[in-house]
Image 1 (cartoon, helix red, strand yellow):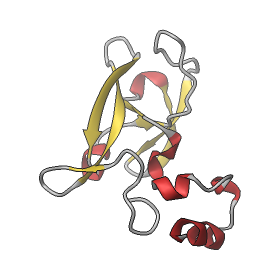
Image 2: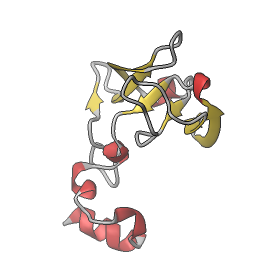
Image 3: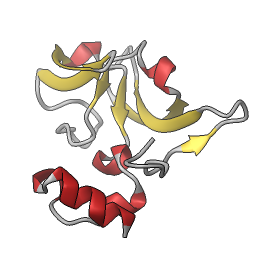
Image 4: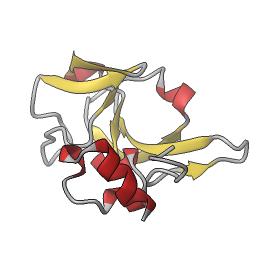
Length: 119
């Protein structure tokens, strides 16, 4: 869920009423980020190592750096690139569309960001 009661960007509700968000799959054999999109719920995401959307990736889909900032079970971690299962689709997928319109959101005071989201 995005900030307040808005769905986060790219999120959708599945047929069971759970919110899902998209991730780009990493091929386990080649270690390359593919264009295949998988939608996962929050509890499904806990089973995978998910890299951030802004991780440097080469033209062929391989990770440029040996160590990658990712999250696993809600914790931010640094892992070897061969341990990554998915990559976020966009850095803005954690906030709602209205919140994503706030310039320099990451540097804003939280009260100011909440006010801007509700406008």
